[in-house]
Length: 466
Ligand code: FAD
Ligand code: NAD
Image (cartoon, rainbow, N blue to C red; front, side, top):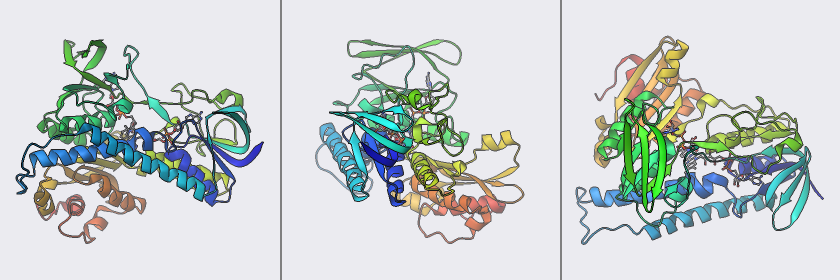
């Protein structure tokens, strides 16, 4: 039987990054993955394919709506070739997952394909083509998550679908009903909206992206409505029925009146649930909580001290980069180091266009905590760079402590927000003040100038270009 210092169950961004860091630290490492490709949800059916389709559909939208204004005439009709778009997406996925195979080989990590199940706290059986057993001094559970649903919905994977099916549709929906106005609903909703579908979003809460700063919800709502999304907040879905090719969704609106939506596809995007099926966690003494998450302490250690858990299967944001940080954290902990993660500085991004990005505290959180803060906000449309590319929507909002000027939150809707949030993460990691950012040179013309201007606005209301 093969013996390892560390075995990792699950090869998503949490698992494969943990494996690389363990190997870098000289630990003999194995990774177990039940699917034939490595990379987990993120690389196979999550981050990467969704961004590939967002990029393709963005090009299409630009060609149809903006090329003429830019002085680019395309003779003939511009058409979507959905088959090719999906094939390109798959090629991007294949290259990316192939890259993980390479990284495992390069770092001498043994890869086992099959379902990993605990026999006890130091032995794992792997049931693949043939059953294998390995021994591990330490194990990291990185089994991720699966789409969740509502009890009365029958996901048929044809017309009542999750994100996984939405990434490989064979036709453009005429009317896609999206249940859940969170990250998946809005990103994949925007893909099909751009390709010509009517998109109706039904959200239970009183605003879309309800966990983010309410200013971002309001701005994104405004922008998506301009893009002709139909957004229905404060709607409680009661039933989802399929009749032939038609989907009928019934919901109660804010006034308690029944509203009916009819479409040809329904995307269910109401969140994801931790995944531990087949893991046989009990055999190793690993405890789950009432949400089905693997229970861990501050060292990400489970109830059994040589077994750790990371990523979507534990508490916290379900984000690839959060899983990666935790993978490194656990590898270093096992190697005897004392790593640290600041969960307050894990950024969140919605890859719609304009993008939405956030890090730190929201206004709602600061109010609730009784922190006195000041706000510096700057509209993207005031930048020369925005006018050059016609990306006028959105703003940067910086929240800073009223007394010390320390930056407490950064919230942005706008072009390239996903990349610009990194500046805020660096600033906040070093506990910069708004004035610090306002005194740093930002290249002109760039979208980053909006960050400087918002910092100037927060410092003492002295933005230069509004
Ligand atoms: P996962 O990536 O879910 O990987 C877990 C792996 O474990 C899977 O491969 C699974 O097959 C395997 N596994 C499970 N049980 C066993 C077992 N018993 N034996 C062997 N293998 C097992 N996050 C972002 O940060 N940015 C984004 O842009 C983004 N976009 C997304 C878009 C979509 C459509 C979706 C669905 C998710 C997106 N996410 C995004 C979320 C991101 O994918 C997850 O947060 C991330 O994949 C979590 O990583 P993980 O390693 O914890 O688990
Ligand atoms: P989410 O939590 O972002 O959004 C779910 C939405 O559904 C919420 O707005 C919620 O209020 C709403 N909802 C819940 N129950 C409802 C109901 N009964 N009726 C109507 N609306 C309801 O979840 P998601 O969009 O499914 O994404 C799952 C996870 O994947 C998220 O945690 C997210 O972090 C991750 N993800 C991240 C990215 C990214 O980082 N860009 C992209 C996609 C997914």
